[in-house]
Length: 251
Length: 264
Image 1 (cartoon, each protein chain N blue to C red):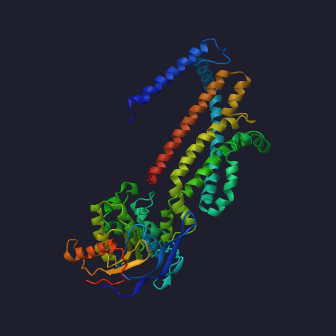
Image 2 (spheres, each protein chain N blue to C red):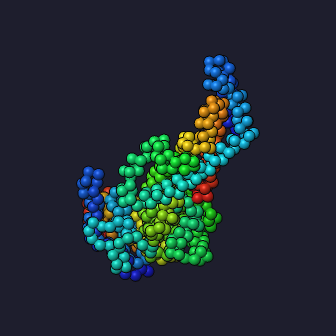
Image 3 (tube, chains in turn blue, orange):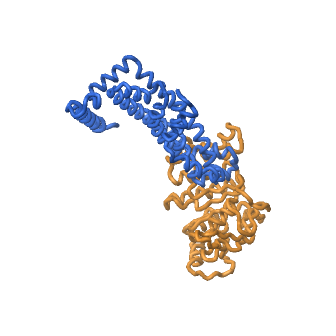
């Protein structure tokens, strides 16, 4: 049961934030182009909702995000499972993963453009990169952290080869892999906007760049709010899926 | 030794086990251990923490290989864990993502037993250990004693020749522990399996064991082998039981190793 305070307190915060924002906007410190107030921003949003451009941008962004995140999950988890499981492969790959990991997805921008030119592919690539490493690393750590007793029990009952992976390692590592996916989702969503500033002609990131070109600060802030809101929804959705699957698997 | 064939099921021959510690120093855990466990026998390895009893059990179950010496099961060298010699670990090793039924079915699943057959068998064993009302429960929903029962049922499902138990009741409260001892004996008598159990509880060893090997901490070998010729069901309050227990107690207090066979 959610208590009244859990609903009431955020609403109060929201009201305080909106009114201070409004006060600051009308104070005259900045021009309206530099710092539009909440009313202007919501009008801009309403306008984009009405003419349908907002939905178009959201759609294409979610499409790119979905493809990139799915690819990162498939490649990241399968590579992570094998690397975590086979100690020798882990020895062979670990230093290189550790070198690639700290490179910001933003540093991949020039290569993304050179390799994938314009349109969907460079954006998808950047989102992929930002989700891939967290997924890969948490999967490796999760597999390495599987309680040895489970593996011993599996061996004792004659489980061998691929069946150990399928019947023991995957379910045992699952809760931690899921946590990794959750973190990766957030990271990837953050980089979506950046990825879409690269030669894309649509999407939420493009929408912000486009608004900047036309000095539509109200649309920029509106776009930022939409990005934050969708990020929150995705995060909640992921948390919900996570708890559902965990429950089904007895965690 | 009534009701027991003299055929050795497990032969431990001149086992030496050394480990390297963090400083690279060789640490001898077991020194030339010799031991025979007979078929259908309930055998207890008794000793204080760190005496090497769990190491010896792991070697017998094939989870580790000796530095020197030989371990034979049915006359053949034990090289790796086998599904006819099941180990029950101290913390049970139940799969948290499988419910009671799923855990008990696991071994049969690996052996590719058809679904209907393995389900029937698993349910039968779940009933044997008294968990018929918890078939769909997950391990996290079970108490320690119940988890122990699931581990037992999971082991029995593959009809092992030998069950190894590593302090199986160590994590249980005193009352549950006594109840589980009776359960283990009941099931052992019904299934006629060879059991090798590690314990540090003298009372438990005397109550359960056909024979007890007392291991010494300092030397890493077996100090004494004792027959427990008490009739089953055993009475913890009986004179002979107490006498046996006192005798073992004195074994631990007097650290002098005597190689005299004990008889009542």
